[in-house]
Image 1: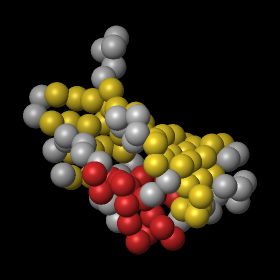
Image 2: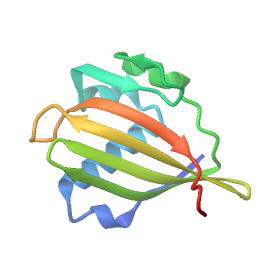
Image 3: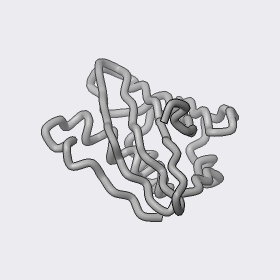
Image 4: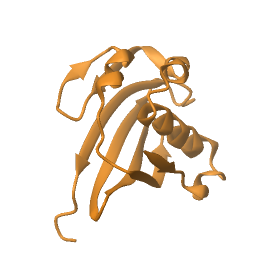
Length: 121
């Protein structure tokens, strides 16, 4: 799986943090995720399963040859990451919603993953 980052995040440290965290999540880099996550993290996986264990992300299966970061946006204690998933001629989108523990935005407290296609495309 190839991941293509978005070069537009460099002017916002908080948005760059969101993109970096998302790439760590997609590559299952648990050591980095643990360093940047709150101890009481809440995660909702693509199938709707809720967990407080980052190790559950090892089970995350995203069917894509290429993941292209479209946007990483943060405001206050909330953020999201939007990516285009490409497999052959098929396209899907992945959105990861985040909540930070504090307004300092240095620890992720909540993660919700969504995957789907554009209906009006």
